[in-house]
Length: 456
Image 1: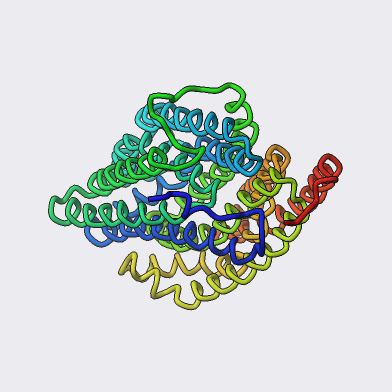
Image 2: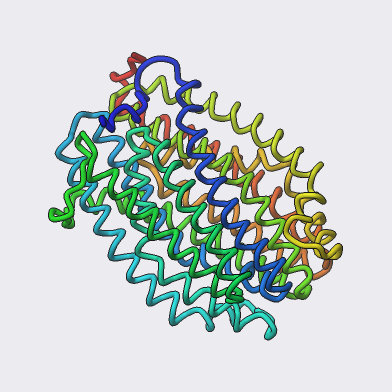
């Protein structure tokens, strides 16, 4: 079978249908992943109790903070692969693939150590309640045993996305996630393993997704074919990957850190609010992956079109990307708010938990298009080879405003609604800063490559 049939031509012809064709499978992949994660939450909430639900939920922000640096580096690998592919530098692309996969393997084993030995200390620093912390520590320790598989899948999928292949990762996630869901039910309900059963199921599903994505790369018919016996670190590639990936990863880590602070503030309300936040945050995750799929598409399209010297198409990309973000986020946010009580009722039968979740949803769901706008511009700029300044602006705009909100506004207005007002405020501030930065980066790029402006 010719694997190239899965690729998308990003540098010729109309863009909007291709952006949608790229983004929809990626969006569905992320939604499936969230659905299967939601199964984790639902199963422990329904069959292991509210404490188990709070334990699993209390680890999510912390886990994201720990792994986002390395996931950000995979963004650098995707940008380098897309740029070299469109520029016809297939030798560089091959070097990028083998360097990225080895980096994924090394970082995965490193994260086992970090997660296993840092779990209790990190959760204690977050003021995780005593009735939750032991289960949360157990969940994290088992979860991090699957980090090598998790990293290999994400880096491998990033390489496939660089050439426009978002369909096969969708199929892989559908299969491995289904296995995860079945194992959740078996291990938690039949074997009464609680949070440990959910974590074990996750590790097994990560192993399966890793095997299948590596198989796609090994069987590939093109410059991104993977040869396991040729894994090595190319310093030139590593430098270019790090130049994009490390700022992207730091940005994600720092934003996750602000969410850890937010989680700590939620923890001060007790286990009912923690459970409500866990459920609402799962629903909010569906909104995020939907708008982030467009941002990922914009990054790959920008990278390939810059590699091909087609700068005017990047301008068109931004306009069409903003349109998609607005329509998608407003639609999904409004539907999420309208059906919120019923959706939250899937996670828990406790009306107090549902009430707490709706407090959060009422202030975050509808204005989520601001997050979509905020997320689009860093994606485009990473694709254009500029990640450091967008990272700084995200730290200042998103993290800075949230930290100030938590430290100065929240103590005098101690409600969940007032706490989560920091979300739309930080999104709006950061969007305006990133918009200004984009025009500055665009000017530099046009000055450097101004003679290369053909559309097709």
